[in-house]
Length: 312
Ligand SMILES: Nc1ncnc2c1ncn2[C@@H]1O[C@H](COP(=O)(O)OP(=O)(O)OP(=O)(O)O)[C@@H](O)[C@H]1O
Image 1: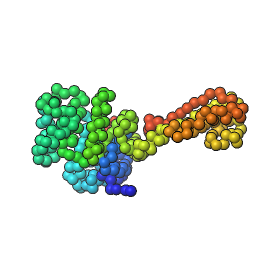
Image 2: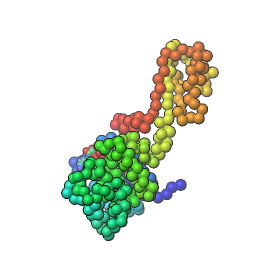
Image 3: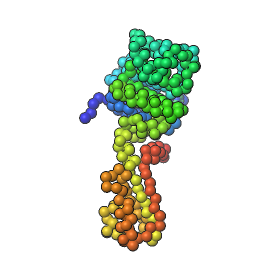
């Protein structure tokens, strides 16, 4: 089933004034109601992509629609649907929490809605601090204020640029809960992160970006499935020319020098890994083992591999 994406990015390009090509034809369809994690190393283009979709930076090529509104020709319509929590904490230090959140609604031309302001502040555990000045808040609370500002105009699509950069583990988990809660309300969430753990914890899908190009967009569950895949390399005491017929069912790969065989297995398989049986079968064939090595393809490895490939 294909439904219309809430954010549809087609061949989006950005060349900065100094000639730097930060987005090299990005294509990305974001589904309504999903949490998409945009994962990439420093300088990959994550902020540029988000800023472009939010109308802060102008693209130099391509198109993007947010809720069916073109980000350039339908700027107002697109912007009205979007909430942005920027990476940098830029708040007026002497302003009170509740006022800064109220003003945010006004900025979008929306009428006062005290009930909503209260709801958002409570949701982010800021209600007790509502009369505090921003300079009196901790770093983590300031980040929550940024989220409150983004939420108070009831966005359908929320961009979070590195929401948990530099915050402690506990607050990171709180933030994840906030994000989950928003998703439950039907908000589509796009978050950028360096933390693979964060993408693993909350994303429905993961997009990997490097050097201005999207390298992969995949359901997290499918990526995790790949993670469950492991390989076992068995070094043999004496080289062999061919895998004995009796070992055929294990699907072993023989190294070209005949000194090792590789076995693939799944840690989530229902019938165990088969390793014990394999080792017994090797012994029954009179093959002696010199060493064994296991390897797991983690999301981290997939990510590092992709980024390295892209660099070549
Ligand atoms: N105004 C600008 N002028 C020229 N180059 C820029 C400008 N803004 C960003 N860049 C470059 O574009 C590239 C992408 O930057 P961007 O901030 O989008 O990356 P990012 O993926 O968000 O990185 P990080 O994880 O470090 O925040 C970088 O090489 C950066 O130096």
